[in-house]
Length: 178
Image 1 (tube, rainbow, N blue to C red):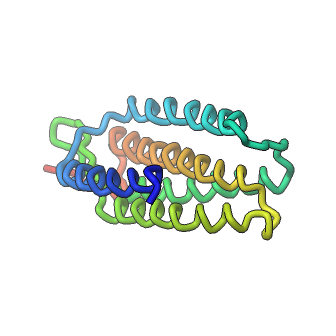
Image 2 (image 1 turned 90 degrees about the horizontal axis):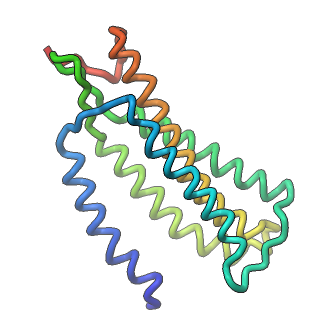
């Protein structure tokens, strides 16, 4: 097995175990800082998409309408998954007014299933892209746009709920600790 396929197989279980352990406890949620991750991820993914066209041996024809549709679909699906994943995060308002968040195991299972599906679909789609009249580079880039949509809309959804609770409102996903 080539190293580029073996390394993720070795690293992924270790990272998954760390994430599972970290998600077992509640962490402080500061809505004013939820913008930082999307602000870092969006330019990096945009740079990755732009840079993929300059990789050695890559033939990058300008994207046509079908390729842009694939990218839009990736972003839309990523946004839907991100919104749902954000809804699975439990947010509690503490008596001192601070917010605590705990990621749901369901959200983590969803991410694991998505990344496993991505790994399986990637080789299938890339090998059959020409037969299906798809731009293989657009399909690969759509996975990046999917991740971007997931991260951005998860944070947006959590921000909306957190601000509602801090303002004294109620939310079916937020528990008030007395």
